[in-house]
Structures are given as C-alpha cells and as structure tokens.
Image (cartoon, rainbow, N blue to C red; front, side):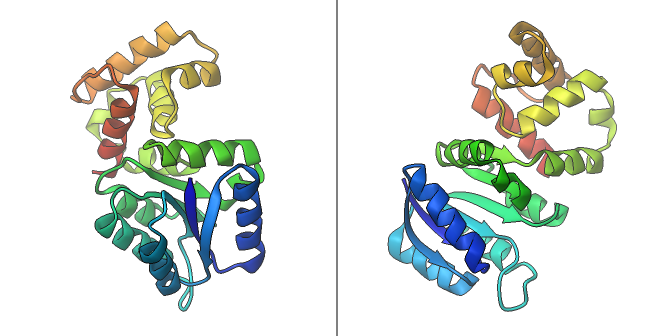
Length: 213
C-alpha cells in the first residue's frame, strides 16, 4: 500500500513515516504544506493519504481543503484526516459526498498504535474510520425527530456503526450478542427510514450519509 503524508510538524511527520513503514506500508512522499502535498499526490497517485486539517500558511483549513480537492480529482484514493480537536464543520464537509475510503481521527488516537493502524487499513480497504468524539458531536447536532425515535441502546449501536465497526465489533464493545446487535440494526434503519441491506459496509455508509446530511 502506497501512502502520501501531509503534516507540517516535522516530529509527527517523521513519526508517522516510521510507524507506517514498520507496519508494512510504503510511504512514497511526505509534505509540510497543502500545495506541496497535492503535488506529491498528483505525482505518486497513492492508495492512501494521511493529512492534517490545519496546515501552512494560515493553519486554518488548508489540509481540509486539500482533502476535498483530492476527493474530487482522485476519488479512488483513500483519505484519513487528522485533527487536534473535534472540528464538526470540517468533518461534515469531508463526509458530505461519498463516505467510502474516508476517515477523521483526533491526533490523540495515534498514540494507540493498534487502533490507528486498524483505522488506516479500514479506510484503505474502502471503509470508514471516525473518531468516537466526532461521532458523538455529529449525533448531538442531528438531535432531530428521526434520532429521537431511537432508544439509548440503539443510539449506542448507531454511534459504533458510524465509527466503522462491524456487527461483531459492536457486540464486543457493548458486551452483547451479535444477534442482539442485528436486531438493533434492523430497528435503527426502520426508525430512520433507511433501506436495509445485508452488506455491513453499506449500512455504515448509510448511517454516515444520514449524519452528514
């Protein structure tokens, strides 16, 4: 798997390079600003990019805007965005189009190497990876009639699904059976007026589209 990194912090950039290399991923380029990052993406056409939301020169949303450009021009490239804080507007913009091959994590999550690499591989494989804090804020923002139909347990299941977890992952996190998760999932999609499907990945995407609507 070929990766391009966009991160202005030299220490974090070098740390990401070493971490991804040690996990068997090939970091083909790394850049410290959004313009250089997009040039490297155009040159190398990687499978995955990992980039910071805030990059030079203004340190506001250059990284996010670069990610949006990338999603339009190279939709097959997976995008994992890192942010220091939960920035709901950025998460919403990133998820407003297709929600496959996309992730939004807080930088603190990098400290948990196993979880971070799991998120990297999930996004690269076509899935999603959303930080639990991001999911929580999106759920609060979407506190509208459809969500109010859900029970507390269904909201928990929905939040974990939005993070990109499978039924088995949800069951493990909540200490319940997979059959119980399946029933909750069916209830969620019935209450949210979303079509049911046997494909777990599609169910996650449907949840994310609802959150980003």
